[in-house]
Image 1 (spheres, rainbow, N blue to C red):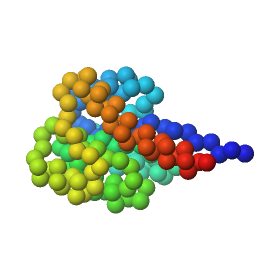
Image 2: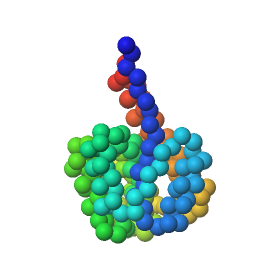
Image 3: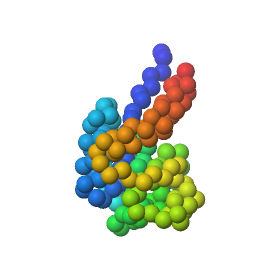
Length: 149
């Protein structure tokens, strides 16, 4: 019996700005078969990930997160994701409108794979999402297919 692999394009967006969330949802709808999960803060995202691990459900293929979050800030969430063996290999894109060079450097030091300034309209957001998914998911999907052979 041949082993079957399901490629799942799922994104966890950690964002508390309702306008940015709406942009992301609109952009995700234009992308096609994309499962977008939105969490408003780092605590909620970590709890969601923990519940998926406990239930043995698939984890997101990529995490896109803001730095300026309520409760558990972005860098603390990023650090926690990188320390957890279940999530340490998931690509994480820090996506922030307001940031300093120190924020960028610290994000990379803590484990971000990429740091991108937030686009301002839906077309830019859609382009950003498509670019990030193409970059981060296609190589992972190839790896999954090769591992299944």
